[in-house]
Image 1 (cartoon, rainbow, N blue to C red):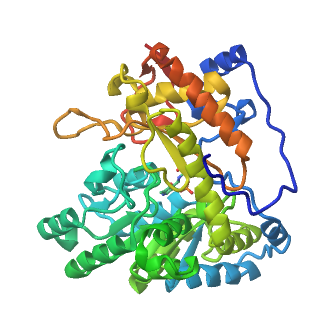
Image 2: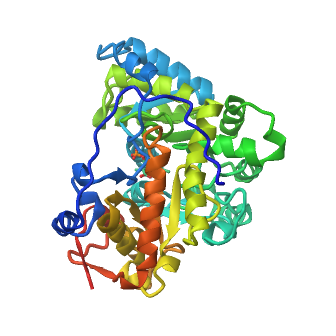
Length: 459
Ligand code: F0G
């Protein structure tokens, strides 16, 4: 029997979801231009598009909303927010934003100059887009195992520190103003980064005098994996592991929509006093005053409470366990998935699922579209549709290492029966996979964000 760790909560409020028929879904999908982002959510039965902003807040967080102080400056909730972020990250400066990508935008527009390189284990799509938009060059340095969906490794999100050292040696800190590490590594399969690797990255950063930042969206899930998989930490509390992780960083960007289990929110936290004024000025220009940053006072309160809740060990065991349960069901049925399962999602290996579709015809997109048509389950492609791009110098199309479809589980939202429904749906599709066709983009734009809006058709 595959183990399911029971939910450490009970349900107090419910939201109706409805099933559609196959002919209805065919119409809906055609109208959506075969892009899952365009499907009206009321026509989705199980929505695994993202784990961002889709979590269920607790009664404690909802109660917090009622204590919102909506004063423009220095509202009561700001103090709680600031104190919580500081206690977790240990950073001197905390700047709220309305979501993670704004934190990225503000940071990169402050520190990047044209031609500068930003290494990361793997950039998330908005992070990559924000580096590029500010003249930077994103460079992915995940370890070899992280690029092979078949290889198992306890910390597949680790960065290749030899390559990082090489990069910093040849380019120097003037061209590489910051090193980023994404915990957990979303684009690489929600895979964790070990404390040992974080320490090693820190050493390389120190050697060249370059600051280290975390893309900390899933910091608590990363800490849970460290506790489970890194011997030294098996008896440590999550909160302690979190604090140690952040002790090696000079700053972080964070989407609170993810591991703070709120529907909107984010922040930047950092230690460099020279960045304080330009970052806050930029924030005032595009988000709001530095004590609310695009959020209402009540939102700040929900984030502060969520940041505490997410570090609860029973919650994390259930959370990561639910993802593993879905992965185990699929693996048992012989479905090719990225191994091991990550912290927030199961990634189907689309290239193996449909080997007859070439990357140029987006096997992952076809899989995501077909899964919706089959069962009303919305997933998202993380492959060529999202990442293939034309190299500016060679003019050639560069394809990503992995063709994946992500089934991201919202936090505290779906039940065991829902998870089993998803697994059965994927299995049904797997049996008729030969019938799946490749796709092409109708309104082509060579943009790093095209996958959000482009329309497609089957070839
Ligand atoms: N960094 C990572 C690693 C992310 O996963 C995300 C968002 C962001 C930054 C940006 O945060 O959405 O608040 O602006 N990830 C979501 C996802 C959207 O579906 O993986 P945001």
